[in-house]
Amino acid sequence: MLRAEELLALLERLAEQLEIPVSYAALATEELPGRGGLCVLRGERRIILERTLSTREKAHLLAAGLAHFDLENVFLLPAIRDAIEEARQQHSLPPLPRE
Image (cartoon, rainbow, N blue to C red):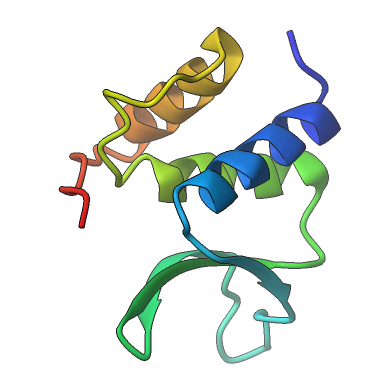
């Protein structure tokens, strides 16, 4: 099993390979306690994550964001595929078509 740091790094590399920008920002406020996820910003799909989250939470949210994409024909290490499939099932997410 991968450590959370390794998993996050591999998920970030996958996002880069898929040309999905990932950024970390201060999202949480008293009015909006956001954690982040997949969004469309200026017509571009990207994943923005709350930078104060633990590495494990960042990896989970990044996996959930990547779960929206069709990764069937992308080579993934078993641990990465498992993390994405777990997030997909946990959040009941269907894959989105690739552009």
